Image 1 (tube, helix red, strand yellow):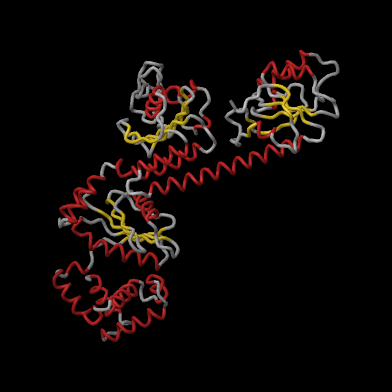
Image 2 (cartoon, helix red, strand yellow; image 1 turned 30 degrees about the vertical axis):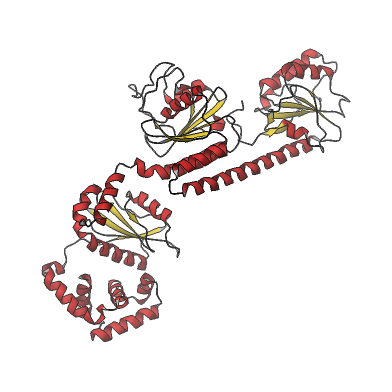
Length: 537
């Protein structure tokens, strides 16, 4: 086992290094194990290299440290210290100090089970180290290629009409193992691949409970043996330490869910792993809190497995988010009722709030927002009621949730209104967004103070507005330009920015409005009367 502080370099099989003809390395002692791997090469002439090793090294030595007349005892102590430090193999350079590998060293390596390689005189230690790093680079490239192909395959599966089972199927194929989705009540919803042995299957079910801190687990092999909060590649550590971190009980006992006095409840881990009867197990929480869990069982653990499983977990988190939401059924019911003709005020109580803000948002730059960006905006605002159509994203936000400026977005916010006033609030948010973009303000709220217009009966105000604006009412471009121009105090440049048109276009439209309305738009009284009318439309 390598030290947890060791950098996660990809391991290189010793056989691959021995196969390099340019090096000419030859195994002369130690086990011929195809599973032997090395993590780097290190040259040292210390008589006791233990303090300088981290584990997994191919230690290279020319025997400078060997005293004259050294006997078997010296070599036995030397090799035992390498093994104790976790060294993977020993490479002995022949010449210029020793013309051959000492026989006592060969015997000591054979006795301690340490592979001993003979390095010929023509091969420098630097060449051996370079070959190790080249093989590591090749392994890393192969790992990245495998992860990339798996990510593309999983994404394609997630785009299918019924994506959960296809994603599990692709994951099981990519890992050459078994993948399952567990529901919040610990039932197995779907699975794919050859199932693990019964004992491993049972242990994996208990492992998923480590990610649910409020669920007690009782079995002859509880999840106390698991390593949590770390990727599977690092899960081979002390099982007792893993049990202490999750507060698991001894075999046959229930894991304590309630903190004892003086303790603080820790957040549940996002992943957990274990190994049972040679089967590698891993579990990934989908989202936060007790919910769905992805479980994976593989007969072998290879580099990239954790990354591939993490990609699948991220996709499954998105795919199961609607199932996890307690308001998803209510939103679905509200949509169906609206489609069947129910008025919004009757449907709104299903959404859970009495008063709402309507937010209009535009992203920075010229690219329209994609659905993922719109969904992220809704998440940041704390609402799943998002309309990403067109260049502007509209979001319904409960009035009790604060709307704050967000990086990368320009926001216009309406006043808090009841559902029956949503259309008017939508207009407020649109106007606030136009002003925010024109003034380069991240967030602008529509004012909710009483206005003079409130003193005029609505029916009379609407009739006056329709009569005053009749000459330009049939041309939306003129009314929109006039409204924006007046809201920006007659600024040609800011109006052009708000409408995304040239400033000369604004001048032409305003001149056309003045001609059709037969009004002097430089007169503040005329502007006030027109603004009053435009606010009623």
